[in-house]
Image (tube, rainbow, N blue to C red; front, side, top):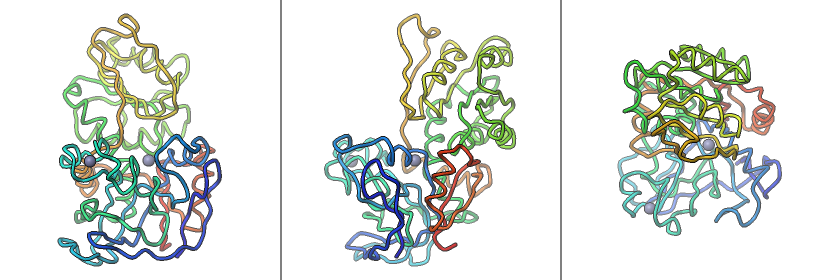
Length: 350
Ligand SMILES: [Zn+2]
Ligand SMILES: [Zn+2]
């Protein structure tokens, strides 16, 4: 079968022919219906090198996946061939306290996982292929009625990551509050929808690109602000001078973190989601009183159940451009150039 593989660090992925996977005991092979192209894959291609991570190439890309059960290994129960499923992407050991809570992102025994601190498309063969081996049946969530694999795939990361971030700040998003979403790309446009669907907060979206601001408005943002020297004043004016209760930074560069710190209100949350690697000086007087500055990483399996429900009910609806497996490398080129709107999803059967 065909697969888009990263063969070594600091290289472009290559479409190659590989053997079809066969499920061992407890494992499942999924026929991929959709595999999202994530901005973090660009970091895998360009920024990482040997020794930084406990895993490395070669592996098939694609860490946000959904499809249909294709083959069941011995002992797998509760799933049927042909059933539509989403793949929960972060794979832990399955046995530690965090994994038992479904928070496999924070597994405390990663050495016992299929790939330490990784998952499908992250050290282990992912979903940019016709078939994908999932090493433990617990990582598959049946799709609720009304949700197809193409729409479900981006929900497993581009949806789950902002959902987890927003959920952590729910108590600060009461009526009368404001959430600022910085960066309206694959994750940010879903963040706008998730805040609107699960809280009563107003949403201010910020981006450098005009198209992204239009997308934010279509996604329900109450105000779309062009980033630049005026952005802090504009957001402050829009909140009656008070500032934002929650800032979600989907970029994470020096400039966006400074913007976040400039608009966050006392007692607010400033959450760093994007991995651009920027820094923000933090000291007692550098941010307003009682502001919490936090990072966030992906999400839990129970949270993915909730995101899939939002997706099935149309409350969260990814903006998708589809690519065939032959065009998959092109999806990344367009992403790199900033030409993609929303999420690119590779559809192997297309
Ligand atoms: Zn990702
Ligand atoms: Zn674990």
